[in-house]
Each structure stands twice: as structure tokens, then as C-alpha cells.
Image (cartoon, rainbow, N blue to C red; front, side, top):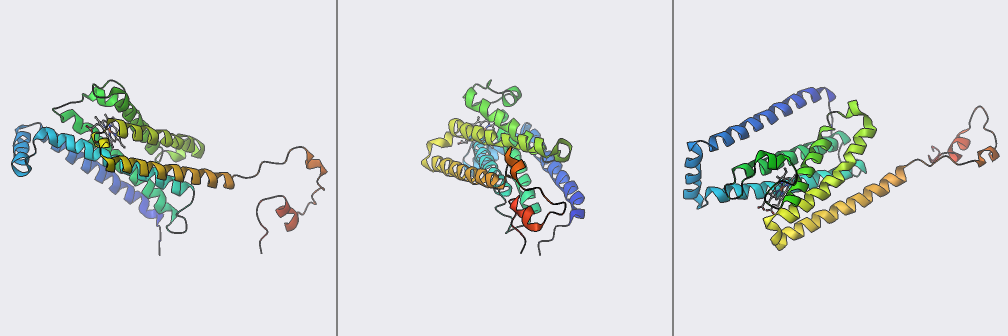
Length: 263
Ligand code: HEM
């Protein structure tokens, strides 16, 4: 049924990297071409076809890619909490849910890159490369844009750990992964306070709804983690227990652990 063949992993990773490099190349080529006289022709064509001038075009792309990046990042956060609380284990193989979590994070980063880079070509309020990379120095809403920059760094850091998990060990991986809570809160605040579309009731409802889902999933995740934690060893009075025989019987073993006896 849902067979997962580990021998395909290398090929899949190579295809992934090649597709990523190809997409990156296409985007870079388009951005370079837009700087030439072809860009002027393209803007005139858009004007003629849709009555939109170039300035609005970049602004629309920034806003739409920002909203898409937010939704993908939200989905990745919710999915990650679902994977961690083993919510999907009965429905789909764990390798699939784990990979889907990784893809969603990569997609969110992809749309964030578009969201950021396009700002450099925005003729109404252009951003310099430094303003995109260094928090709190932009001319437009420096604080909330700065929070977005920090959120981006945290997201990239958390995503990189997918690939170095073995090298850094599971505990460091988990600790770094907890940073995604801060990243989610930061990105949500950035989106709400710097977005033009926050003025719309539908956008406010979208942020409120997605935020509540994250709160619900976080509480669920925390409860499942608490119930999965092994009991702490009983203090002191251990000596009052009858000594274990060399051959521990099944009843004795289960009396000292949380695992129910096998039928
Ligand atoms: C270097 C990092 C970032 C910079 C410089 C940046 C810049 C901006 C700017 C200038 C706006 C205002 C656009 C407008 O409405 O006029 C904005 C809005 C927004 N950003 Fe970012 N952003 C960054 C990271 C992110 C990230 C990581 C996400 C999501 C994953 C994100 C999602 C959004 C959303 C949803 C909006 C609101 C769009 C709207 O309502 O119009 N941003 N950002």
C-alpha cells in the first residue's frame, strides 16, 4: 500500500536540489531581464493588458507572496505539531508526514524570498539589500519589518536543521526546533502590523483563525508530550520495596513500570 523505499531517497534528494536550482535560476533570469529594456516592454504590456502599472505590479506580488508565505509557514507549523503529537500516524506513513513538513517549510522560504526580493524593484518604496538583511533599518515600519527579518532567519535556521539532524543530534535538533514558535509569533506580528491587507476584515479573520489553530495544536502537543514522559524514579523509600529476585517475574516488572502486562 503506502510503501516507502529508502533506496529512492538519494535520487529524490538530487531531483529536489536540481529543481530548486532550476527554479532559482529562472527567478534570477526573470529579475535580471526585468532590469533591461525588456522590463520596460513587459511593464507596458501589462499596462496594456490589465491596466496595471509596474509600481502596483511589484506591490501586489510582495503582498500576495507574503500572504502565501504566511499560510505555508502556518501550515508547516501546524503540520509539525501534528507530526510531533503523532496525530497523523494512523492515517499516513510517518516518513511522508515528516517529508511533507520539510517541503512546506521550503515552500514557505521560497515565497518569502519572492516577497523580499521584489521589494528591491518596488519604485514606490524600494528596499536596499541591507534593509532586507539587517533588522530595524528599513524606512517603512522599521520595527515590524525588523521582526519579519528576524523571523526569516529563525525559519531558515530551523529548516537547515532538517539536513544536519544526524550531525547535531536529536536534542539540539529539538531545542532549535522550539525556536519555530518564536518565529511563528514574530512572523504573525510582522504580517499583521506591516500589511496593507490587515485593514480588511477577511484578512483579520484569516490571521485570527490560523493563530487559534496554532494555539489549539500547541496545547494538544504539550498534553501529549506530558502524558508520554516516563515517570520519575521514586525517591528514597525504594529500600522498603521487597528485593527483586534475580529472575524478575512479569508481574514484578509491570508493577514497577507504566507498561501494561502483555495479554
Ligand atoms: C527579510 C524579511 C522580510 C521583509 C523585508 C518583509 C517586508 C514586508 C513589507 C515591506 C511588507 C508590507 C507590504 C505592504 O503591504 O505594503 C510586508 C508584509 C507582509 N509580510 Fe513580510 N517581510 C519579510 C519577511 C516575511 C516573512 C518571513 C513572512 C511570512 C512567512 C512575511 C509575510 C508577510 C505578510 C503576510 C505581509 C502582509 C501582506 C499584506 O497584508 O499586504 N514577511 N512584509
